[in-house]
Length: 158
Image 1 (cartoon, rainbow, N blue to C red):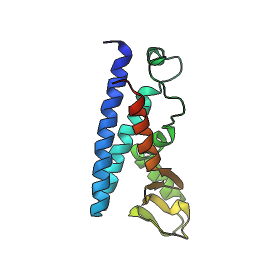
Image 2 (tube, rainbow, N blue to C red):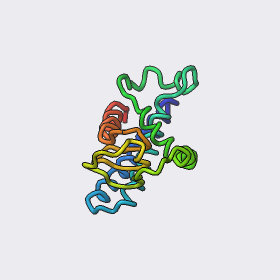
Image 3 (cartoon, one colour):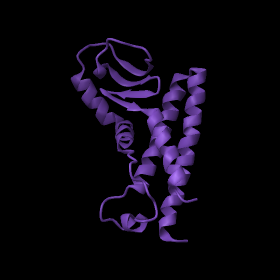
Image 4 (cartoon, one colour):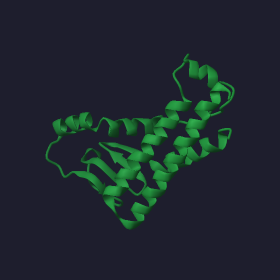
């Protein structure tokens, strides 16, 4: 097997894992099981970030040289979701900062907040507004990420 195909194959596996986590998220959302919603979203984001890490290597790396010319991902950006995954992966550090900055306002942690209005963005530690994941003042469009993964899957050689 050509060396670059190992990375393409692993990316397809990670996309499959992400798709399974997304389907579980949708089921949990339909059943309104909040803990499972956030569990499956965290798994989804972890696998999506792995796809980004596999296919967007550091400049000048051996992997970059191997993938060049075989996988076309122009216009694809998963970096914002790697950022969200990093927030969740290093939650202890984010919680330190959040607690340090906390000023007594209402908080939303692992809440479904669709339609909630009038609260400062910093009140959302971990919250879901429809398919927008809110994390401590930042918002991430999960449908956009899901669609991006589908686009990557189409571009990857089987």
